Length: 115
Image (cartoon, rainbow, N blue to C red; front, side, top):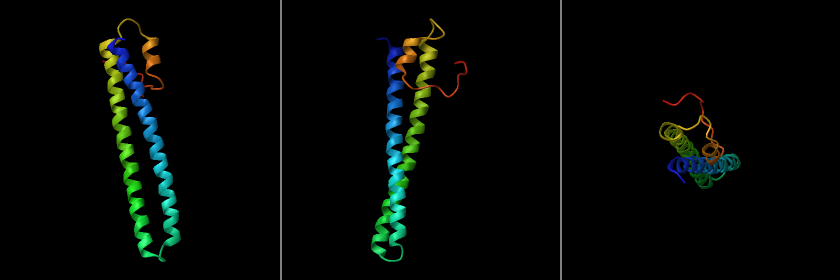
């Protein structure tokens, strides 16, 4: 397998990682909602329990933000690999089907010509 196909595989693998991180972020979001509901139940009744729930809620929020950062970083790297495939690799045809197939579900944000 040539190097541009390896890069195409890497693009697909990054896409799968993004999907997993999005699922994790969604689960953290559900946890955050559950913690908010629990916080409303104990608000003013049990200060110790309220502090524990606040701590968990803050961890969930931080995790959600970090997932977002990781996803944006991975998307940037995907776009960089996509540009590299087109700049250094694809020169024989305008629509190399095998390379696009190896990229999986990834589709670039823009179809602008590559420099």
